[in-house]
Image 1: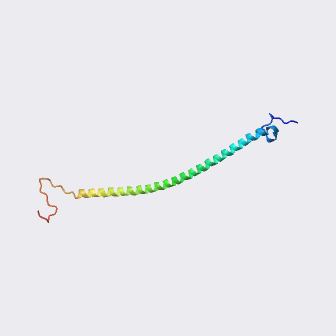
Image 2 (image 1 turned 30 degrees about the vertical axis):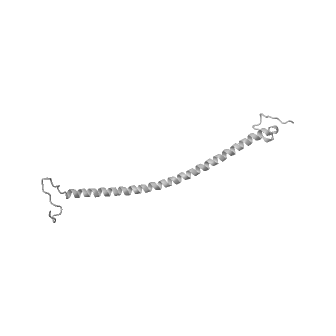
Length: 118
């Protein structure tokens, strides 16, 4: 019995095929190394992405807190603006109610303090 170097009916070479041992091992070893190397790279990339995701989640949480504080500040400023507008309207009403006509240039003006004579 002699070992064949090539068997067309065999689905793939195997270590028991004799002369093909030297051909089978490097390709299988190469495949294994490539597969493991790819797995390591994928694991590294997955770890990096998980880390980045965690960092982004922290940043999002901080931004949400800042947004909440800004909304509160805006609400306080809006309330203050409404209060100032109401005070302004009241002052305008008082000005209209107690408006004193300005003296004309032909009319003698009265002194601001009548007790002091000039």
